[in-house]
Structures are given as C-alpha cells and as structure tokens.
Length: 291
Ligand code: PEP
Ligand code: MG
View 1 (cartoon, rainbow, N blue to C red):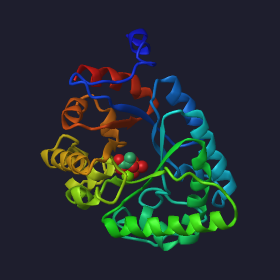
View 2 (cartoon, protein in one colour; view 1 turned 30 degrees about the vertical axis):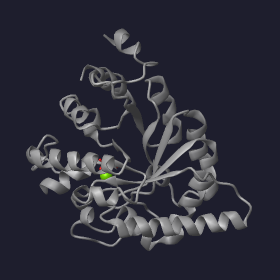
View 3 (cartoon, rainbow, N blue to C red; view 1 turned 180 degrees about the vertical axis):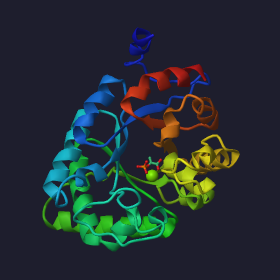
View 4 (cartoon, rainbow, N blue to C red; view 1 turned 90 degrees about the vertical axis):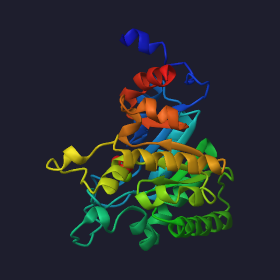
C-alpha cells in the first residue's frame, strides 16, 4: 500500500470531474520543506511563522526571517503560502508580554496584535517582501474578521514597500495577498471579501471552534467539535463559492483538509487547494483522485 501511494509523488492531482487541485504541505520551520517535497506536495499551503519566534528570548531579526523565507521559496517550485505571525490564543512568547484575558482565543491575537504592534509586524513584512523575488510567494493574514483589517494590513505593506524602494532593495510585484477564513464573520461575508483579496485559505481548526463555540483545546467539549457539522459545512461552501464568484481561488489549511471523511465533500464543493501535514499528502492525493 505504501508502495502504491509512493507512485503518486510525481502525479498531478485531478478529480473525477477533471478539476486540477493543488495538494500542499503545512510547515512550521524552513527545513520542513524537505518532508513536503519527499511526500509529493505541490507547494506550501501554510507556513506557520510563529514557530520562528518561539523558543528564544528575542524576536527573529529581519535578516533571519529573510533567510528562512528565501530557503523555502528557493526549494519549492510551486506556490508558497506564508502566514504572518499568529501569536496569542494558545501560543505565547517570553519576550512579548500579553494582557491577561478571560478568553485569549477571542482576544489579543494574530492580526489584531500585529496591527497594534506595527514595529513587530513591519520586520516580518520587510523580510517577506525581500524574499519574494525567489519564488511564487503568497502572503496571508490570520484571524481576519472583516475587510478593514485586511486594508490596514495592506497599508502597512505599502509602507514597507516604500521603505525598501528608498533603500534600493528589490521585491516582487506579483505577490498574492490573501486571508485566512477562520472567523465565521469572514465566511459569511466571503463574497464581499473576495472582491479585495487574491485568495482565501480556510482555517478549520479555528473556524470549527468559533462556529460551534467549542474550545479546540478542551477535552470536555470535544464531542461538540465536529468538522462535518452542517453549519461548518455551509460556511465552508459559502467561502469557496464566494471566492469563485470573484474569480479567486480558495484553499484549506486546517486539519480538515487532510481528513479522509471530509475530502469527498471538499472535492464536491470545489476546493482548489488542500494543505496538510506532509505525511498526509499522498493519501489525500489518492482520495481526491477517487472523488
Ligand atoms: C486553523 O485555524 O485551522 C489553522 C490552520 O491555524 P492554526 O491551527 O495555526 O490556528
Ligand atoms: Mg487558526
């Protein structure tokens, strides 16, 4: 069976209906790209950059980040979706004191923190822009609840571009800018948001917990945490349809993208890109081709 799956490493994934889909890998550090390549991934669908910031006593410099992003872009010939810093919630940093909150998952995290701490955000955006010349970079912002946050983030990007231009540093003008759809409000408004962004990536780990009000970390309510709940499925369908109504692509980078029981439904809904841990890629390719 493993041998059969290995044959799919070089195979492009096409559904029964003849639609080409991308099957990509999720990574947490630059060296993880090797595993994705070895398992036949078409690209990177989620680089969780917060891991570059963790287990150290100060934030990574622009240069360190630039090297990490460049490494991934140079190694991967397909698309590379890098997510900007998603800290807060369950993830904290020793050098970045966060407020004590009753509900950190509903609080100061991800894009909310980055828009508030622009000096931190800009270091990352400058590194991403500089690395963009080495491949097909797509940047996405986490925890977007509405268009204003996306526009604010893009304004910070413009500031960084102006600085780099003044410094004579190069960046690509074909970077795609997208958002994670992981807050129900974004899924409901997907057709409107799609007018402004280049792509969506559905973060089901958070989307499910917010839709069903069931903490993704809590054993006690895990029986409620159901990817196949009809409300979750409707939001996913609305997001994909919303993207397509504006000619944009829609991916998924939450655990559900690699879930055998969910894949047939996601294929039926027309999901364009599936991103998951490297070890799930080959099995997912097989299932997608059977559906
Ligand atoms: C998600 O929420 O589905 C996701 C991919 O992001 P994370 O698991 O890092 O919150
Ligand atoms: Mg998330």
